[in-house]
Length: 534
Image (cartoon, rainbow, N blue to C red; front, side, top):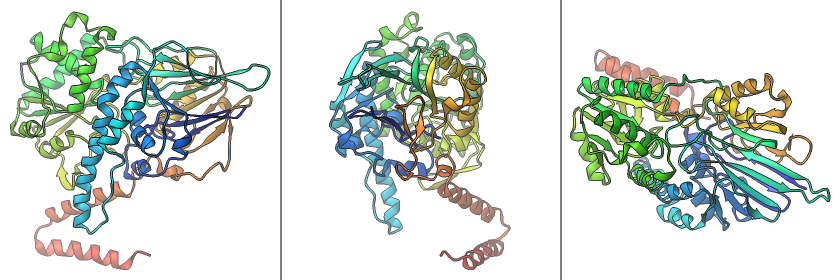
C-alpha cells in the first residue's frame, strides 16, 4: 500500500498547518491554513499549492484558527470539490471566521494597492474574497467526537477533544492496507493541544497504541507555572489597574476566538466583584463579537461558567460592530480597555489602534498570546523602538506588557505528558508547528526515556516521507522546496528595510541642523553608488 505524508506547512514554523496524506488511491489534507509572519513566509499563500487541489478527496480540520483553516476558500477556488470534515464547534466558528478572513484579504490588498499605485507598481489580487469564503462554507460537514466515521473506502477518522479552543480536535485515522493480511495503519494528528484545567474545556484526550503521531511543539522547552484561577484573575486585575492608573488606554491584541472570550469572562467577574472599576470595555472586532455569540450558543458544552450567568453580556462591555464605532474609540485619552483582533497584530482593527496610541507613553499594550517571528506583536514584545504600520513610521512609547497564562497551548511539560499518554508509538513521532528551538527541546524531552531518538523526526517544509514500512523514510528529491530551509522562520529583508528606514529617520531627526542631515544623506548616497545592484 502506498502511504506517504508531505509536510506542506507548520514545518519549522508555527503557521500554515497543512499535511498531505496519500494512502492507496486516496488523497487527504489534514488542515489547510494561512502562513503568517514575515512577508517571505506569507508569500506562500499566493503561490501554487504543492499538490493538485482537484485531486484531493477530502480535508480534515483540527480546529478553526486561520493558520489551520484559512486557505480552504483558495483550495476550493482552485478546484477542490470534496467535503471538509470538522466538529460542530469548528463548523459554527468558521461560519464567521472564513468570511471575515476573506474580508480582511480584500481590505489589506485594497490598502496595499493604493501604495503600489503611488510607486507605479502593478496591483495584486486578494488570496481569496469574502464571496469565496462564503462559498467554502457549503463544503463543511460536522462530525461528532469519539465516533468512527468512514471518509473513504478503507479510511476512517475519529475526533478527540484537544482542549485548545471551542471545537478543537486531534484527528485519529485508521487506514486499511490493501495487503491480504488485513493490516491497518493508525495515525494521530494532534492539532493544537490545550493545557490541562483550561477555562471552558475538559483536559485534552486521545487514543493510545499508534503507528505514527504528528504532534505540535509550539511551547516545546517552555514551561509555565500552574496558577489557580483566583491568582490568574489577581494578576490580570493588577495589570489592568496599573494601566488605568496611568490615565491611559489599555490595548489588548487578542485572538478573536477563545482568548477574547476568556478575557471577557475574567473581566466581567472582576468588575462585578468591585475588584476593577466599571470602565468601558470595548470589544472592537466583528469576528470576536460573532464568535462570542457562538460560545453562548455552545454554553452547555463549556465548563466553569455556569455559576457566572451571562458573563459575555456584562453592562461594561461595548461591542463595536461598525467602522465608525471603531474610529470613535480614538476620542478616548484614558480610562478605557480595548480588546481587538488580531492576536499577533498582523491584521484587523488592532493595527489602527496601535497606529493611533503606540506613540503615547500613557498607553499600555498587553500581549496575551503567542507571537510568531516577524509579526508586529513579536516585534513589540522584543522591545523595538519603532514600527511601521500601514505605511507610517510609529515611535513606540507605550508600555508593552505580557501575560502568558491565557495561552491556548500546552507548555513543554504538558506536551511531553500528552505524548506519553499516547504510547506506545511504534513507528514514528513527527514534531511540527514550532520554532526550531522549541522543536529541538521537545525532541530532547521525549527521547530521554520515552522514544528512541531515530524515531522522533523534525520535518522541514515540503519534506515527504514514506510511511508504509517499519518506520518513516524520507523521500529524497520528491519535489523542489518552495522556500530555502533557512528562510522559513527568520526575519526577511522587508523587516530589515523597515528597521533601517526607522533608524535613518531617527538619525536625521537627532542631527543638529540641516547641514548635518545633508551629510548623513550624502554618505548614504555614496555607499549606494559604490555598491550598485547587479
